Image 1 (cartoon, rainbow, N blue to C red):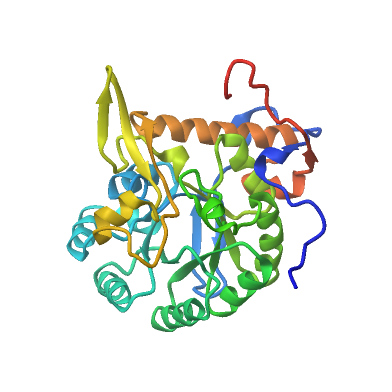
Image 2 (tube, rainbow, N blue to C red):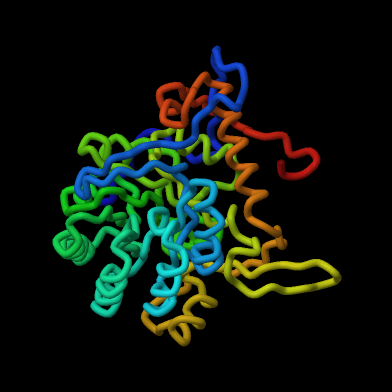
Length: 347
């Protein structure tokens, strides 16, 4: 028999962060860098814990070079060749501590990771990336990666429930990707009916991960800087951004000019565009679970980075958090019927 989980589950647009008294005089006082030691790899990372997603439009080497200058992180998409990685590692050794090599679960992708790590062991993360992290096969694959790379920090997902977070952590994962279907170019929820409201997923999964000493990434669903603040306030250790970092010079995707305006193509990893580019088309046994959109051209990504970091500092000052790490303990969410005033359009 089907079951129903009682109680409301919430997304970013369902809440606001309640302001509270603060001793902070200026946004300049807020420290966004966070130092984290991971349970399995035992490595320590100090960074601003925001990832560019491993999508064609955001997870590029050029994006990694730009974000690394500001202390941010990049999950590199899996379609670069070994030779591409060799050149990047040779020319940009200062970036390796801020990037992840990403792969699915095939034998060829595992071999690719192995080859890359031979000449670039300084790469900070290995991401085991699948759309559905709930299979037993995926758990066994994570165990294999952990056994092969005992001293590397492993990211795995995506999942959205505490019991699977615990299973992945026990299999050797240091950081679990949280999010089933919240992304701006993901259509999993409409194609399959499967998902979990992202804010509640973060709160519940963070509790499970932190109980085992592990961390989580809030992966997808952020449409503005306020959503990023809510994700951190809910307990996310990292936030991964796709759509918010799309459309920039440093991202991939074709540029289109129409009526004097420029756009860049941005598409989901399970879109027909991605599958046509990387697999020759959509396999008969599957459906398309991503879409392709035209994003207005945004120029250099540093402008967006400064806006994001400024907004996070401001959020911290509103609740009296002197650092990003303090934000969860200073956050109280208020449920609301309307979060923003849209009389003149989206904020």
